[in-house]
Image (cartoon, rainbow, N blue to C red; front, side):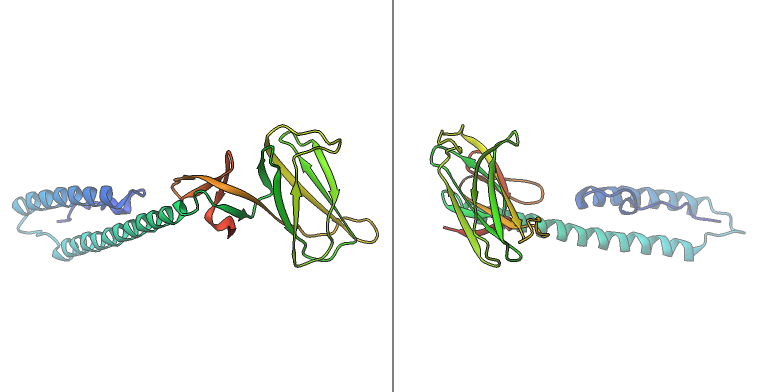
Length: 222
């Protein structure tokens, strides 16, 4: 006589540990109820296969241990995220250097920096608005491996103030033949952290009005 198989909840589509553990308990209750019924009604000439019963119980025990381990991992992830959020709060009110090419520009202007992978013959710097229009251009420094800074006073090429908002820095490096050099310069911007945002993957920082950066993008705090 065969024992009806019950598939443990943890072997079904992924759930969190608490839900899986509750499902496992329900499955085990169902299995034991069915097993008791089968024991009462078993055919003496064809008794239950105890090896099959033992294997099923061992499977439940193994799944229960796996769920407990998953619960511990979930708790560790939650604790890590909490610690990250506590650390993120310490950035509030500080100016940070973040590896991002955009900046929220006010009447005070904006600050960027860039690092070239290799020396260039010329470097053109362009500030573009949210529509992709170039509002300011200038020449940059050409050395490689060091950070070059650019301070922009929020004035366009005609000396007129630009509208406050988000602006992006473009860095175009060329060789002696005038060809664009392969490789993407590393660009960063400076700004004040004004808020901390909680996400499922961990906290992020709001720099300026609404520029969102992750903690891993922060290169320096001032």
